[in-house]
Structure formats: structure tokens, C-alpha cells
Length: 158
Length: 166
View 1 (cartoon, chains in turn cyan, yellow):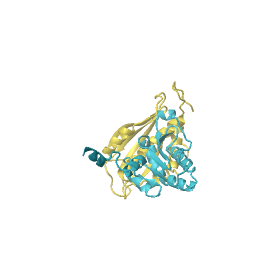
View 2 (cartoon, rainbow over the protein chains, first blue to last red):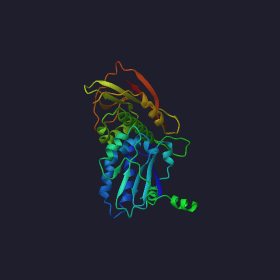
View 3 (spheres, helix red, strand yellow):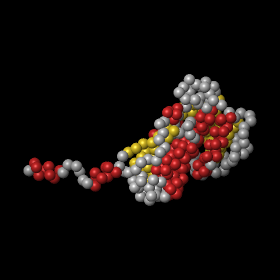
View 4 (cartoon, chains in turn purple, brown):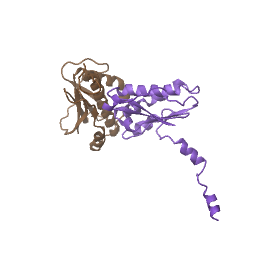
């Protein structure tokens, strides 16, 4: 199930405070899994911090959220900057679904002009990615073949 | 200090300082990325610099943040001046011109390989001391021409505008 969380950025929070809030949300979510160490999640978010700061301060995360994939968690996390930040209905509780996760990935968006920075940062930690997350449902469909059996249709026509 | 506006929220000078600091730091970050200048120092010092600029806007002392881009020989190649103007009754909105800023990037000329940067702040009289910041002189901008970007960020108690010198 796809979810989305909005985090209030400036003027409610500075870019540093906003990144800390996003990191805490990600770490608290991943901590639900007995197979994921808190330190590993913290390390990944610490490695991503330069990209996070650039994306938040420039307002890029308002339009291009990061995506957390872990177990059944498929959650985008974005920011709201400006007057609307005061009206954000924030939910900073752990995202449900990470309890059975054995691994995780944090996908960082690559908007210009920070695409190079994001790619460089993503290379620093195996849990970070600068690629868009694959859609699990579509992948499953692809593996199980087309929904319509064209060969069977051909046989019916014969 | 609390400003009074007939809006659904109470905005403080801290909100204005937080917002304009983010707008300026975001513009600096975008510009350096666009120019291909090494930003490791920017991000490792981010919290310190963000805190200092925010404190100076909050106390009303910050006049200008200047992003100076320096050639490997130490000569000023280009500069971006962020002026902070303190106002009253400038509305109850927090607005940043990020889309316009993205388009403005097309006007920014490239810089020589190995160009570095520094941030310089100027003040309206007294200002508090902030960790990691020391007194310096601005580089001479003689010979550079100026392009005004206009307002970069607007908040209830202050605005920030940008000028590009090349």
C-alpha cells in the first residue's frame, strides 16, 4: 500500500530541523523490524544529509519526495514550505508495515541542479539509491506474464 | 517578538528568520551546484551557518549575505548578494520564488575549474557574535556588472532579494 507523509519545513522548521525530523521518522519506522539495526538506518540517513539539506532548502522536496521501501512499506516523504507549512496535518508516527522487513532502501530524488550531489551521496551507503523505486505490483505482473493469453485467443479463433 | 496579523496563525520573528535563512541557504546551495563548485564545506558547516544567519535576521542586524566565488588565484569571479530588508506590515505570507530562481539559473555564467566560494555577511550596526564566523573584508566588485533577481523570499517581518554580479 502506498502512503505519503508530509513534513512541515520553513518557516515551521529550518532545513536542518526538517531533515532531522525526516530522519527520525525513517529510523523509527525501520526500528520496528527485528532484522534492521537502528544504527544502520541512522548511518544511511546521516550519509544522505547533504542531499537532504539541499533538497529541503531549495524547496525541491516539496515537489520530489524521497521514498522509503521496507517490507510492505512504500512511503513517499515530502516537505511543505511556505505559509502552507502551518497547515500540514503531520503524522510523524512510524509508517506501518516495516515489522517484517529484512532490508530497506531510501530512494532520493534527483532534481536539477542537485542530481550530481544526490548520486554522489547515494554511492556512499548501500541502502541509499538515486534511482526511482520500482513498482512492486508492476514487477509482479511482469513476472507472471500478460493478463490476456494471446495464444489461447488464437486457438479460440481457429 | 510576536507580530500580530489577522490570520489563522500567529507568526513570530523567528518564523521570518527561519524562512528567509532557508531561502538564502537554498539559493546558495542551488547556485553552487549549478556552477559545479565543491559544496562539501557548505554541508558540513550547514547547521552552524544556518544558526548564525537565522540569529542575525532574528535580531535584525543582518544586512546582506554575499556568496563570493573565487578563482584558484583568489580573484573574485562572480558574486551573489542577498539583501535583507526589515519591514512591517508586509503581509502575512511566507513566499519563496523558487520556480523563478530555477529559470534564473540559465543566466548564470560558468566559472573556471577549481573555483571556490566563501560567505560574507554585512550588518546594520551591532550584531551578536556567532561561532565559526570572524571579521573579514569583502572582495572588490569593481568591474563586475549587476543583474537584479528581485525578491527571493517574502515573510511578514522582512524580505530577501538577490543580485547577481558578474
